[in-house]
Every structure is written in C-alpha cells, then in structure tokens.
Image (cartoon, rainbow, N blue to C red):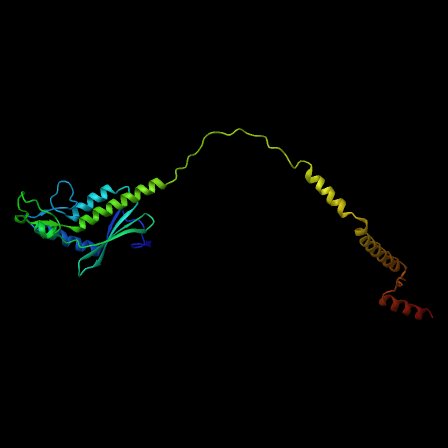
Length: 247
C-alpha cells in the first residue's frame, strides 16, 4: 500500500483534479464537442446528455459521493502522450487502486472501436455510422464503484458500541483485610525485639551515657577563674593623690 498526500491534505471532497489534469480534461471536452454526428457508445454518460463531457460528469459524481469519505484523485501522468493517472484513496490517504488512461475520445467505425465484436448479418451495417468511445469515462465509472465498495467495507467493519443502561445490583464489599494489617505489624515488632539483636545497641547506649556523665562531672569539678574587683584607673589616681597630701 502507498500513502498519497496531495498538497498535505487527506480529504479532497470525494473527487480531486490537479490543475494540469484539469487542463487536459478541458481539451478532451473541446474534442468531444467538436465531433458532430458521432454516436458515443459504451460510456457512462449522465442522464439527459448524449456526449461524454467531464464538466458535466464531475458535478454528478460530486453529488453522488457527497457523503463518501473515500476519494478519487485525477493527476497528470504524461502530457505529451496525454495520459492521466486515476487513483482511489481511502479516508486515511492509502491508495487502493490505480488506472492509467487517455481522456481524449476515440472516433471511428464500429469495427474500429470493437474489432473483436461479432456483427449480426441481418442488422443494418455499422460501417455507415460514425461512433465514438471514451475510455476515461469507463475508468471513472470503475473508480466510483471502487470507492463505493470501500465505503461499504468500512461500514461493515465499523464496531458499533452498545451502551447498556441496566443498573447492576450493589453488592456490599467484604472487608477481607480487617484486623490483618494490625496483626502483621505486631508480628513484625515481635520479630524486631529480639534480645540478641538489641544487646549490642544497649551496650552502646550505656557507653554513650557513661561518657556524657563523666564529661559533666569533670566540667563541674574544674576550678573556676578568680574574679577580681578592680577599681577604675581614674579612682586609683585620686586615692593615691589624697594619700600623698595627708602624709
């Protein structure tokens, strides 16, 4: 499968024609209009028309495929050989089928258009009339059938969600863990409080407390510095002066 994105879009409105392809299709319409007294056979001509014109058929296809998410893409393949590429894509952009066709009409006798056909001898000679045929219209008919089949497959494969409105009866939930968590915690505590596991830590605790107490006693027994009540220097000078005067 090939992913085809035209102008970064995945949705072309059911049928999309590039500018170059549209130019060639207009040229084919002019060739069809110029061919007078020609009976076109074996083509998908819309009701009420006698000649295959793309300008008429495109509007009918847009109306018929208005709700189809799949697309028909018409692009120019080679302008020199007047070849068009017709592709059918799904809504996600994956190419499903592809045709290469010349949109120009072919005009000639019935035997020229259908060399393998067996003519009835009793009927009027087909060589007296001029006939025309457009292979492009046959390809467009096949492409339209293909996108219709894609739409049918998508609708069949789509899963329809059924939402139930029935209310289920409420069931009281049984508390299966009631009391189990507390019992598990107590068991775990009992396992942790093992004497031979606690003994080293208890000894360490006694050692730390002993060190702390010995440090406190040594701090309390230490001689405190003497606090001397000294007079200010100014007062000392005044006292010395007074003593000298009295003597």
